[in-house]
Image 1 (cartoon, helix red, strand yellow):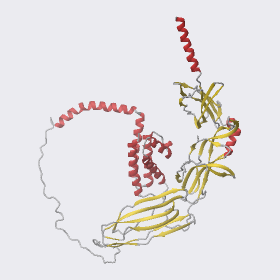
Image 2 (image 1 turned 120 degrees about the horizontal axis):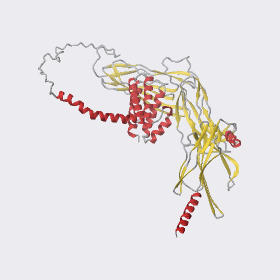
Image 3 (image 1 turned 90 degrees about the horizontal axis):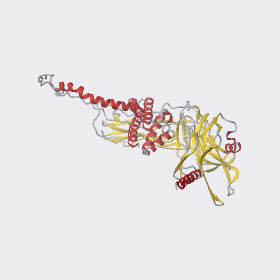
Image 4 (image 1 turned 180 degrees about the vertical axis):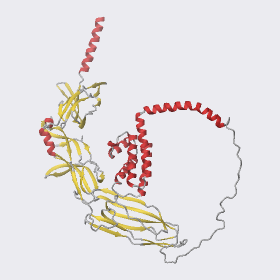
Length: 590
């Protein structure tokens, strides 16, 4: 009986072992030694379908393709065969000996792991991946091009850069592509134009028929003269090059070839604006504009208000110059203008209008002239300067007091009003006092005496609590780093407020405050800052899109301030907007 029991246990163990032995999950690499300019393919293969596949971290490699999934499931002579593979294409970051750690997957309720694989990366080789034909074909048939509308613009003249990926009809490109390096456009004011989907279009490249997609559209306004370089756009893509092998349907099977493509660096030669004929009141406007000055009314009574609007319309660098100022007689009280922008940016540049609206309140009766205002701009199409001058306007204040010895420009005579002394001028000064005597209270056994006596004993438990909290706080390294960044953000916001009116100091302090705030809240370093990443991180933390866009716009204003005149009102608005946006992000961060 005991023998039968032992045999049953042995059979159960053997059956279980055989069942587990039927499941295979393994990692395979295309080679174990490669150059820094080669690509490594790694396949994770299994003979049973599984769930929750977790790949290795690939810390020493860039993933340039994948995961690509292939499944084979067929029966032959009553026997079922199944195979599933996850494939990745890797690019080594540097030379050395590296270990690709295990991947995991769940099959039939059990977790399986692959064995780690050691890979050696050497210096660059002459024939990358040993697949010369496919790699050469991909190199010849895929091109990333940066099309520049004008390589010789004037300073502050709009140009456009359109990035197109051209692919020959002979090969394909998988959807697993990514932008490896993004242009930063130093020395340019830039605006990306949103692209709604990637549409495949027909075109030609060097006289041959190609398909292409538009990847990026950017409008640039050069802020310096001379030879300015555009950083290249670099992409990692996977080309699908057809081979001589065919599937059961007779279709040619492609080979996957990882490839890095670049649009290359471009040089823009920016011409300075001509000095000949430059008006004395020119403030940097470049384009084709119209100009007008309007008032909401020309007749009113004293203490009533009117609005005077200075407006520029047209096409050009509308956000990059300062409007002329309004000058009026001193008898008219003028408030800081309200700046408004109605500007849209497309491939032809900025179009729309900007305006400053002044509120004017006259104090006295009379007629007041508003002198004519001139606006000058440079038209790059004709390479000439143009000046537009508004008409002089007269503000007629019909009712109200007359100004004493004031030259209002009125046709009526000046009226002199004498001053009458008031006999009670100093009646508000108090000439009597009510003195009372104060008898000092003895200190011994007073409230202050007992308070000072008991205070040291009461302070002991308080000191213990404070010390424990201090120790816990000192142990919190991450928390201390965040608190330090918070203090820096407050410090720089304070410095920005103090620097209001000093453009460069103000925007430098404001930009530092925003960066330190991001360090504290998102735990990222300054070297990782870019608008796309900031927007992505804040969106993932469930911050409302409108608030995120406000934060990005403040950063853009900080960059824009380096190249354009900024008014006191604009600086105050940016400071208030920064404080409000930081407060909203604090409330919404999850």
